[in-house]
Structures are given as structure tokens and as C-alpha cells.
Length: 72
Image (cartoon, rainbow, N blue to C red):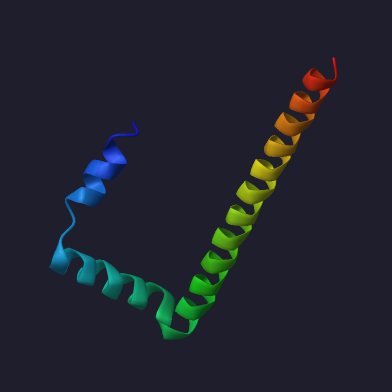
């Protein structure tokens, strides 16, 4: 299942991307695309923020474990 997506995206070349972009433009219109991109950007930034928060909590947990083991 996971290998289908990269193979599908790997087979799309020049004109096919242009056709896809034209279809998206026709479906959503010129006014909706900036709103969609803005929402996508916010989603990506929230995802990155969540990853950084999770990494920070994980690192803090490791540091606490190391400090506890050194005290004993």
C-alpha cells in the first residue's frame, strides 16, 4: 500500500503537472486557491510545532532519567 503513492508521484512529469494545476484552478477558482494554500501553510506549521514540542518533551524525559540514574 505504501509503495503505490511514491510510484504514482514518480510517474508524473511536466505536462501532467500542468494539467493537474489547471484542473485544480478550474475546480476551486482563483479566489479559493490562496485560502487553501494559507490553510495548508498553517497546518504544516502546526505539525512542525507539534513535532518540536514532542521532541523537547522526549529530550527532557531522557535528561530526567539520566539525572535520576546519576544520583543513585
